[in-house]
Image (cartoon, rainbow, N blue to C red; front, side, top):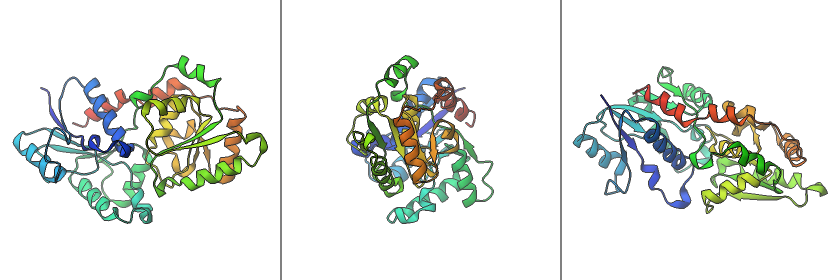
Length: 315
């Protein structure tokens, strides 16, 4: 008998210029659930389907749960309504605010309160990396059995075939990319410093740095991944780092500061421990000494189909 599953799709209602990690995670997991789980019935809660928007999570979703009982509630956005009719499975997208509270002066208390609540109420907490599991266990006792690690899949709109990637490998342009939020946790100043150090050598003077924080369509971003020399990332904290997976899936090499790369992605990335290492790897890639990545292994390891199969097993 199919189960009735509620899904918090509130992240899909954010403004176009605020569509970052949680939006793309929500978009992809909902697509994956509908594509790969034909057994169960899904009820996607979004702003356009449930109005008013005011007090949407705590009150409006609670009313909906009272009206029609469900078996499971998927809390995609690290928060739960006041009332949920079924088992709660929450998703924790990292705890950077715990380790770097100075970068979250206005949201720290709210984020901490939401995390306390999902830890208390959830039957399971899904995280994207062993790193996040370790961080959660350092903050909360006796929750080890609740925490389940499932790495994200390659975003559907950034998937590629081998021929497409091989064709672009020979036509890489003199461009380095940064893709992500314009937020202090992303350490963009480090990226700029590394690029300036890189350009100190005359032979690299024609290279450009594109910092993509908003206003670029997914289609254009895909083209940038396909032609860039490399993606650069240097966050103080990352729980997964979707742009890294997107770039790798499209054959774009990645240079990352160790704090920005989760263990599951480290074997595919040039991981630097400091500025000197970072610049060294930039020069290496610019000179076409590129690490060969097993694309088949990457797609097999980071698969939305596998994600859904594992998630459904917790219903």
